[in-house]
Image 1: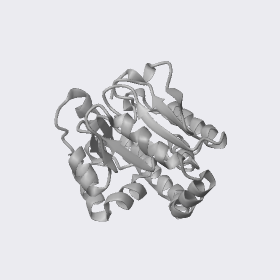
Image 2: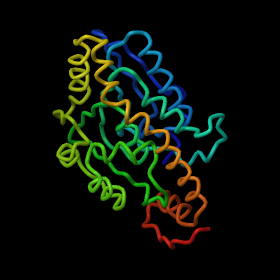
Image 3: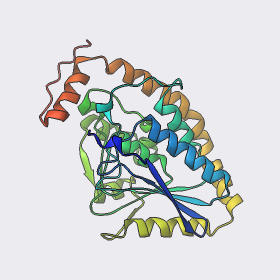
Image 4: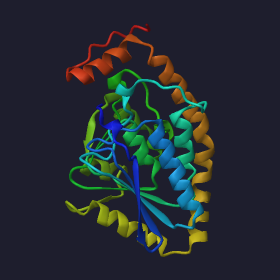
Length: 260
């Protein structure tokens, strides 16, 4: 967590040619997200999809792809029932392929954001950590659905319950990363994959995705509603407050399992 949520420009969009555009999160070094950023991301990807674009490269500026939600900003009232997760659902509904260039860490909700993409490209710096239980609450951003879909239920259970960090080699082996790029070439490899997809018939590409993903997308709202309800419950507990304090103080949390 940190104060880099104050960066004025949340996204930068660049036309890369050949039907491919990059959407870059610009909140370095850690690219924490809040509702405004996910709303802008969901709105921008829909606009790009509606414009006839063929593929998106999702990337970020700075050391880490995304270190998750900025919990230091505190809870803010949202106009949408599920707040940030309503926007996340909109992001999942994007009609064109998204390739994520995951440099550095994808932590918590940042891991959820990476898994919202169709493909993930990493390099030697890439690491994933589903640190929710270490903070004292449960996973969000539809990881209940997307993580076991990629790595299997047993491995997903292990990653969520241990909250351990995995490197790019393990991430590639278990299916979190589709490609591991040479050092310094992560975006080049992501763009190359996006262009390979964009070279195909765009109506066919959209139809293939819809056929493969429509059942999952229909399940996501129920999944996200459950995740969100449990997060709200657990955020009221001693363990959640202790988990957040421990992260700020860079120490091992002392959990009690007490509800209030």
